[in-house]
Length: 250
Ligand code: MF3
Ligand code: CO
Image (cartoon, rainbow, N blue to C red; front, side, top):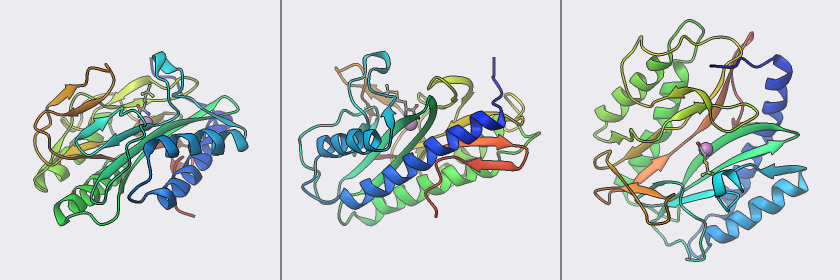
C-alpha cells in the first residue's frame, strides 16, 4: 500500500531534507585525498546531533554506521573505514536523516581531487539521470516513466543502470511503497499522486549492471570491477507541484 502524506508531514520531511542538504555541503568541503570515510561518518554523527537530528541508518537492520560510503566499484552500502581516500577515487555518501521523527534520504557522489575524464563523465551522467527522472514526476504520470527516462538517457551515454537496487517510498520508515526502479517501460507502475513521497537514486556503472555482494552481507559492487556512481534525492508530490526535499541549491 502506498501511504499518502499530509502537507504537515511533508513540511516536517522538508526540514529533515534541508538539514541533510546542509550535511552534504559540509561533506563536499571535507572530500580530499587523505581524508577517511570513517572521519566523514563521525562528522555526520556529530553534525546531526548538534542539529537535533539522528542518523536513521544506524541500527537499521543491524547496519552500524550513520552513512554508507561506497568507493569506486562499490555500488552501495559500503562501510565507512579508516583507509584514506586517494586522488582519482570517487566516493558516494548516502544517509537518512531523522529530524523530529520525519525522514529524508539523499546520496551524493564526490570526486576525490582530480579524476580522469571518463570518471568525470560517469559523475555528470549519473547526476543528470537523476534530474531526467525527476522531470517525469508529475500527477498522472506513472512510476515507470521515471525509470524509463533514466535508463534511456544513461544507455545513450554508453553506461548501464543497476537493476538490483531501486528507489522507494519513504515516510515514518526508510523503505515504503512504491518501488521506484531506475529502468523499465513507460506507462507502467502506479500512477503518481499528490501526497506521495519517494526517492529516486540511480546507480550507474561504466561497465555492466551486474552486481556482486561482499562477504560483509551489505556492500554491493560491480561484477566487472567498473566504477559506479549514485545521486539520490527525496521527492514530494504536493498540491503546489513537486518539491525536492533534499535539494542542495540555496
Ligand atoms: N539510504 C539507503 C537508500 O537509499 C538506505 C540504506 S539502508 C542501510 O535506500 F541500512 F544501509 F543504511
Ligand atoms: Co539513500
